Image 1 (cartoon, one colour):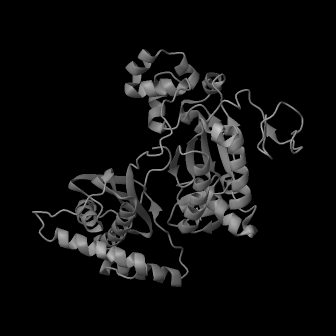
Image 2 (cartoon, one colour; image 1 turned 120 degrees about the vertical axis):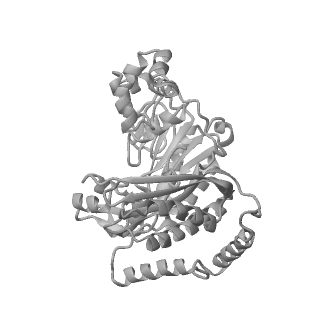
Image 3 (cartoon, rainbow, N blue to C red; image 1 turned 30 degrees about the vertical axis):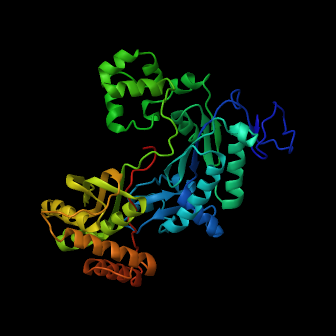
Length: 440
């Protein structure tokens, strides 16, 4: 068993032989498993409750005003049916007594970096898949640290709680799929294990949606073929699954049988960089939409430059007042990370969509990423290189003197609008980050 209090593995007993605690977990493979998934519990909300103890026990929602969406919420709010990505008006209808707090990403990033530093101390094989979630491969670390992976993880969990002031849930298994599955079993502040001997039995009774990546559309296809549980898929040979679902069938067959060959890859590449925002009021005016588009292009560009990437594909995302999504995509003639290029191409896509519809959300992003390259001239646009240099000079000024040191007319209009909202005490909706979350 593993003592949750002092993180020591020992023989089965009623109390820990080292600290006397009776808080422990038992598992026959506890000394053999080494692939872990760590998930911060209601991360943003936990940080806010840590910094404002009077919020303890209250339902807390992190997100924008009535026009925004829920970024995350605490477990108390979840009892009322509040969920991430839920429109704010629905969340407040479900839980009118909730305390709504705008996101403070600087504070969340600081905590995330502190947790990441502790994970890096345990193993170089850390794959962080979002600000609050990561995989660790602790194979071979026992010789380095003199402690088994489960003990190292228990100690890590305890130190995050005592030093950083939040809880994390840990899943430990022999591959990434099962480690992530285990981390969801005992939230919050949980520690769960799934071993090789029990994997197929554990999975057999689970619905097909238990597999991360099986959404509503795919699950309907699976049900139509007569597979209701992962156990049903276990009973079918691989060839039958491939006939029914193509390459997806092989993936489903592997997961249903507890197979996941993906390594923990610290160099796993980000697939996209993007930003989006939900408006306080629905917009149909093209000029106002373009103002917001420029601001998001600047934000996305700055992130791409920080990451040292550029994209070959640009995507415009819109959501209408009746919550219907419109996604428009274009392949660029050369990759970019520049705000002006994103805006030029994004504006052309936006113009085609301004057909009288009213929009509640707009987003812009780049994908098909590659390492950044020096700015190149453009025969079609002789002034492109000059504008690129001007944009990079402005970036340096913003880094040195603040984001508002240099701004365009569009940027000033957006800032002015935000100040009006603040002065009138209207809820302000910060932009929601666009890069795909979770395991990519």
